[in-house]
Length: 78
View (cartoon, rainbow, N blue to C red):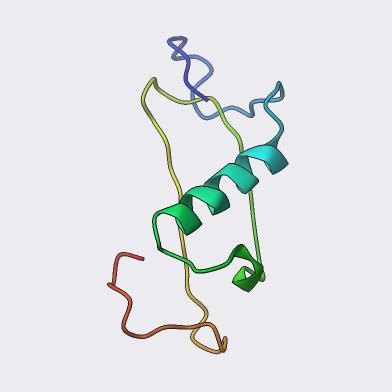
């Protein structure tokens, strides 16, 4: 979550919005962008909400090659 206070950067953000709502937002955005067809294919989800420099946002996506939903024709950055 963005803040100008450098002392907060990297520390847990324990205020609204809720982490589960942010996870839903990220999954919906990935569906809208065409990265995933349906968020039901997501089998593991980890969410960490911290204070960050303004404009900072991070998201890591890892594909499980054992999953039937794995699509080897997707670009490497997905």
